[in-house]
Length: 189
Image (cartoon, rainbow, N blue to C red; front, top):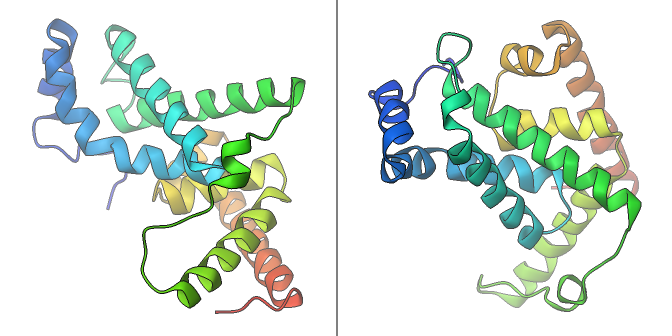
């Protein structure tokens, strides 16, 4: 599967229509929203911030749709480049003034049934997110592109400027490190 090939049969036509009429952008939004949100969520500590950044990504894409050139790269590559930049911009701003929202600390509930399962899943997710947060910026970025956005190593290499083999090696070592860290903490599944 080619990650960046137009997944929508009429994607180029939709982009052309979106340039003239913003309502045509809705089909692109609907198609890419979950992939972009998942990528952003892997990179950021809470879902509310990820939702805000994802909204910014699509706002930037819509506002700059005229600058997209289909002959240079598929729409998804252009969109994920915007997402990477938005996340990196947010992270740079956070380093200048770090804070933790009270909502994030107090709102840890879930809609899933089964309190025992919820506690176990939340603990596992917290441990995993904490372990991912301890990774370097490059490793978090690659993990997000691979698992949240579902991109291949080749596409990740094209986006990041790394070689495809280097991407594979970094991902392999990072996953091995995450598994070892989670195992050392007694978290296995």
